[in-house]
Image 1 (cartoon, rainbow, N blue to C red):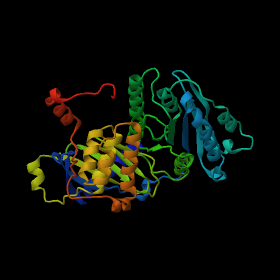
Image 2: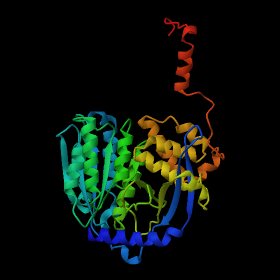
Image 3: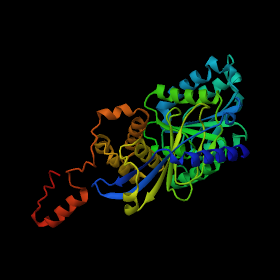
Image 4: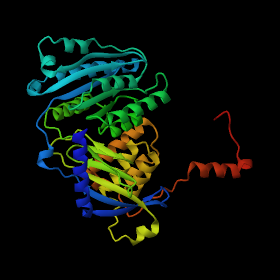
Length: 410
């Protein structure tokens, strides 16, 4: 904790020095093109001193597998992927320990092995690889118990990465109790040197998994192909095998309402309306903070700073709010970029599959901005010429005496 406090004070100091960096403003519009809010944005670069980066130290990889019944078709490919990953010779020189947890129904959670040096896992005829091969599906989905068990395996002073896999909804004993419990665990884990990546299979609860990853400074990916899962796990393991930067905490001072951290090299976008903890960056990863202050219209009009509606700061504001569960704010932020292509595509996003696609497109806009050259980007919100559902209902209500319904055909 002392190391964290030191890092936080250094970042805060660099933040005040860099406050004169780029300052912009943007208007948050709704889909009708009406202004909903006005924001002043400060862009503050993350600065580190050479002494902030420690030598390579012991790191811990905790892999959590969903073995509920619905994982029947995905479990075998996942097990094969894990075995391929954990038997790579390049890990021989890593100071890495590995734990494997699987879960199904409430009270059905297994720690298959814990805190095992990667070199032991690599050995010929390894009993730990055999443990992976024996895992089979059964039961419902209780994620919180696996995260709680993982929490017990974390030790102070070592960087820990949690990779959580699931294809379902955390619903045992109930969806509400699971969401509440996971929220509590994530808040407790924020005080530790840990980051969590979540991997969403099939029809998983992408919204919940995104929130877990955002809270714990990680990424949420949709497992469209086995290669995507492998790449995600490989990147996480490679990171742990290098000199990982210590966690940093960026407080949100009173004048700001929201902040987002972005690292192009670390492929991170994490946001919060309170203190933001960043964990899981390499020593040479660069990053920056966007600080958002909501202001009144008259104050906004007087601000002598550039208007930046199509700036990265607005795209990451949308992405972070989406992961934070603020769906309407995320949609309005997307509309406020004047990107008609993405706005039309994601304006009605509600399901987990739609939210996942929305997330991926926002990440692509940030990490591969050249794609925006092929988008229709205007100078205002492109207002749809289609009437809303409420307007349609009103028309039908006003003309109810003139409507005949063919019930047989219907």
